Image 1 (cartoon, rainbow, N blue to C red):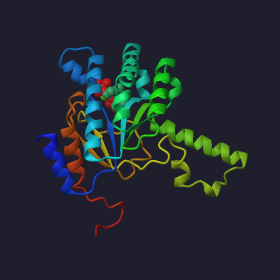
Image 2 (cartoon, rainbow, N blue to C red):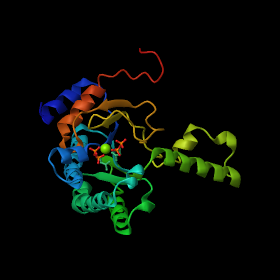
Image 3 (cartoon, rainbow, N blue to C red):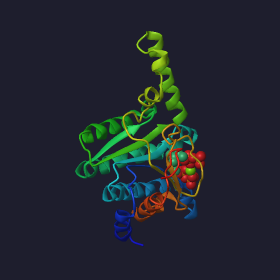
Length: 247
Ligand code: IPE
Ligand code: IPE
Ligand code: MG
């Protein structure tokens, strides 16, 4: 079915996920199927990013979190890392004005100190340029690992307790949440992983506690706004109980 038809189905179908997170996977396999080098898959994957940003705005989603590069991905060959970093800069260069016009607020989350200076500058620029927007918050996770994020929060808490600015009995769930990169934002309602893989791969371990999961067989470069709508329609059939009994 086409995206406009699916969008109209979403309207009457049930509550909308406020926050959608996506593990964008399958770029390498997409390239391999075409006997192309892996970076060509990543390049094509950029088009899918544009698709889902537009789809999320059309559907009325408030927060879109995209896992673009994990801390573990630093272990890939230097040529692939180089290609991914150049694509990040190119994406920002090409899309910043359009994102700004669409009212998208871009936030980059992760260990950004590991980025090359040029990529880091581009990241800082687009965050500053779009900081006042509010139609859609676009979280791009780069150089991100969830365990490292939790360790960082724990270390901060330990430092504050040692300094006497935080009491041990003030260390609760809110204290941890507020020291994560995602501080202040809602937890994801829906997590989509593309390419058929059924794992979390160190993404948002804390924040996904009660998130609904949708595994799509589609490789990321082929993912369209219609696929996003299908995931939302699937989400709308779920009974979210949060440990309680259904009413
Ligand atoms: C996802 O695609 C993009 C990144 C992890 C940067 P992959 O590069 O993991 O593609 P596959 O899983 O090898 O197909
Ligand atoms: C997860 O995909 C990270 C991103 C999509 C950025 P990977 O391809 O790196 O994960 P694994 O290795 O299959 O678990
Ligand atoms: Mg992969």
